[in-house]
Image (cartoon, rainbow, N blue to C red):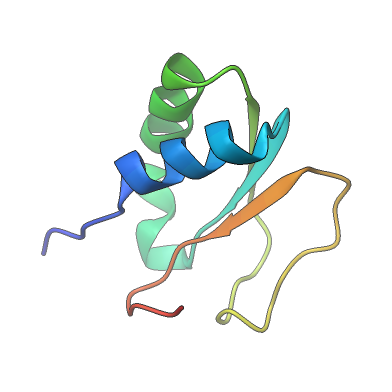
Length: 79
C-alpha cells in the first residue's frame, strides 16, 4: 500500500516556520521509510532532520525533545 506522506506540505511548513531542527515520528509500519523521508527533507530545506525511533501510538504520543518542529506521521489523516 502506498501512503501519501505529504512531503511538499511538510517542506512548506518547515520553511514557513523557519525550523532549524525537525523531529520525524513514524508508527512502526512506516519506519522503513524514515531515512528516505529525512534525506529528502534535508535536501529541500535547511533544517537538520532527526528521526524518533521510540514508540508512537498516535497523535497523543508526542515525544519531548528540544526541536523546533515535530512531524507525526500516521496511517490516517489527523488535523
